[in-house]
Image (tube, rainbow, N blue to C red; front, top):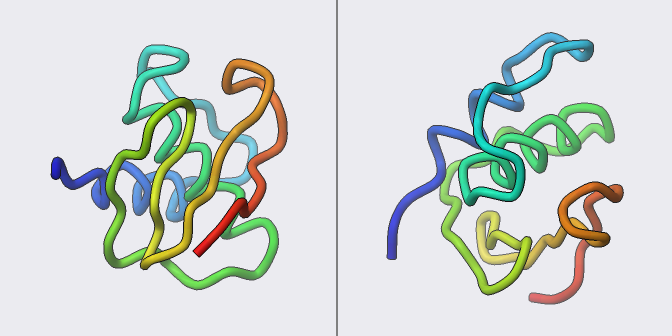
Length: 79
């Protein structure tokens, strides 16, 4: 599995109004957006992030997806 932890941590550490230069829909983009979402909602800084099928990542054992072609709000979809 390819680690996406660095991208999620970048998103988590970025200022709230930041945007990413990663290609929309790419695994790096999804991880970055999920990192931002975690920060905005009081989540902990991710320590292990891997890719899942579709617009989803597994963050510290929990699957998080971004619906609507990676344009929606991230949501937890399973353990």
